[in-house]
Length: 632
Image (cartoon, rainbow, N blue to C red; front, side, top):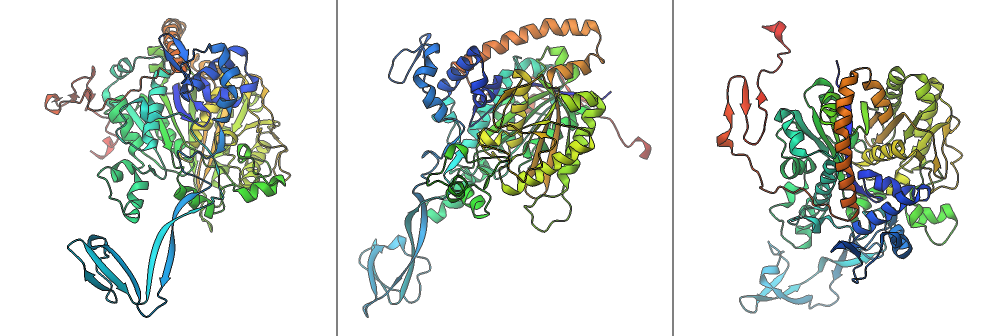
């Protein structure tokens, strides 16, 4: 019997807001929400953005004025909406209108006396060029004569042609939520996202850990570029060029494995599987696949799957921009025939577009095998039936699309049909498209969906594209897509692509239902999370709704099991409501166990058949399955 990986919690942060309890999804479909959900969304965003704080049992603004929940939208609504989703890059990242850089300057001598200047002796180049004449004035200062030419670099500023990004909500600062110790922004976001995901389960984490053998808890996470801020790789590669010193932490904290390591060391305290995969834009799905495979095989019973990317730096943006991959000011003005680019509509999947919009985000999903989920009374938010990964074969351009995504989509759809049946596939499935917003992608990706739909007799296949709202967060992008899928399952609202006025003429939309407005839909059973990454990194996940998941599990478990589960899940739901209310008030209490609860290695006990660790209820079994018995 193969274990079914159940989604029991999800948390994180991107330009739409917090992931847990679908806050980010609600921000995207704001105008389709009922009054209660809309009010909760504005409250949660207001506290997240530090526009409102909960003090002395009341909500207050930074000016100290008391504000009622019902008044937040009226007073702060426009500010909240303007400070979320894709927008002009804010100056806490860098100034896009005056981006700092080092400009070369060749200073040529224009007299027989040469170029003369005075400087500190310790600032002289080493070795001193042979043509220079250096005369010591005192122990610290020297006169220098350069007879011909001096090449220098000086501070300069330029108008950046790329001005928009999917940034965390304005005012959100994970660094002030815990003792962040000058950690890179991506790792701060990881701590927030992991806490949000764990708390969203409504389960006591220590109880979860004690319910399984210690090595049956796994963490699967990764980034692509690593941590590119000054505290990580960004500072490592820039420091000497800027005349500054490299710190002792920049290399280690810059590694793309660090989101995995931080979750293990500072949040969960896991001693089980630790895994990091990078697969360009499919990175989240690569890590999800590893977790799903381990749960199916019984190697892991609880999996924390994550991905993070906070790479809104001038260097990363210039790299993508030089490739022609990002939407720039000139391209947007041409599209709209205007003198002013609309920074809210830079990402236009499947419409007339000119490039993608980069974003920052951190997404974490908690999975359990079905038996453990029922035993603990976990909330069944859905299930990950499988994740398929395929390459493109021989390529000419490493960044160009290829046939691999046809394989991942077709396999994913075929599996869904085999399990849920052709009616569920044709009537109650939808696509979370990669939808990067490039002219090439809109054609190639829509062709894949067109051909797969034809093969499986699907018409009016609903399609949503999260990147229209949060940008392309790169590594966690398919995590954003999964979060939207869970939002659709929960709310029965299908997000339209509101940043386009119409579907582009070259999109293969015959079998697709791509709308430019959000709309209410019938309950969905199946979501296909699709990703097409640079280098031929293609992945597609088959996600089942809570209803479809329970329908499958009803065939595996008897009535008494479901009755016991029903009693326990009632308590879980109560704890979830408690966390949601606290989070909406900004009471996150991030989990950060820096040096807290470290294991005493001298106290562990090893026997022939098991290893006992202090602090864990169960032992690690050493009588592992020998798969090579025939070779004895």
